[in-house]
Image 1 (cartoon, helix red, strand yellow):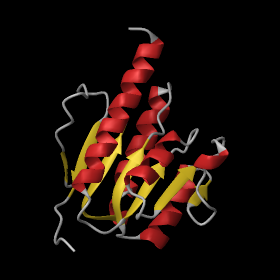
Image 2 (cartoon, helix red, strand yellow):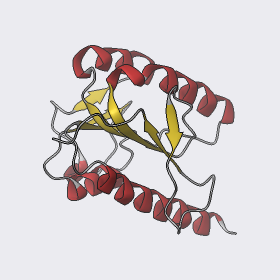
Image 3 (tube, helix red, strand yellow):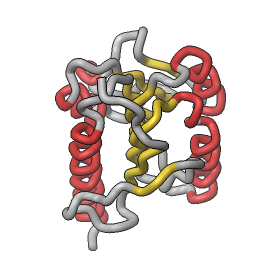
Image 4 (cartoon, helix red, strand yellow):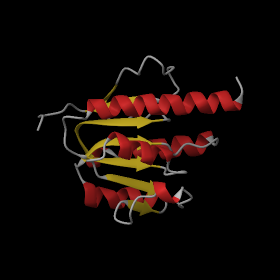
Length: 168
């Protein structure tokens, strides 16, 4: 498989998983967190899928298309090791969906970030929150969600944390 084929399959998997996640949370209140703005494609897709939801984006340095950059109230700039703990204080227990796309070709760096996020995300999450990620998150009390049929195992991951307690 060429690198072009690989990126196309990754993006298709990402879209399918986010579409499923939007359906899974449609009856629940909560905000969305996007880790890794990149060029803004996923943020734009999330806004299209869930125009009524607040979406907070974490990014080290903005390099996105100008139409795909959140306003300053929803953009959290800086190193994830500093910004995620800050978010715990401001967004505690309000998050219903997390999308993480912060992986790189450095497996050690990916492992460290994934472990850090797996430990630090729970205080942000509402019961029943969904995590969609390109790296497998091992969050305590979570369970895997069946992937969409068009997503190969190991290409993308969907996890539900806890169980929803009530439908608004």
